[in-house]
Length: 207
Image (cartoon, rainbow, N blue to C red):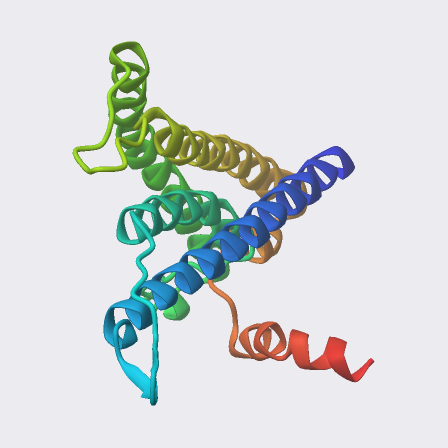
């Protein structure tokens, strides 16, 4: 089980790096859009006698921000899964015995993998077609579509690999360590765990 734990930590580190990169890219795109909005609103405005703000635009700001959002989102999937921060409807779940909850957790991972595998199987040909045909966006920027699509597709593939690992890990853990270990890996967070997760940043600042 130590090997599983080590792989789990590795996936956690990779997903954390991806989330930081995606967050940084989202900040840059937000800054780019902000500059575009200010340029549209204030460009050409006379703020002082004889001084008029120049008009300026950031070409493709809305297009590129969409690409960034798509890529950052797919790479964040694995992080949310590993940290159990994805949204789940647990009104009935919390009333079930721990063993039944563990089975539902594994079933939920399996169904999520089935959906994501199908989704990825449709996304990969889109990327391949864009690559082979050298497709570009229908915008003045003529962005080669394979560039944002490769980020999007690799994020989906990484999430599928994470799901496969988590299914194998939880099933093995169920037989070796019992249902409580499945809850810690893939179950819904308890109230105390959610509070600890939400206050982790504050605790680190205090240190």
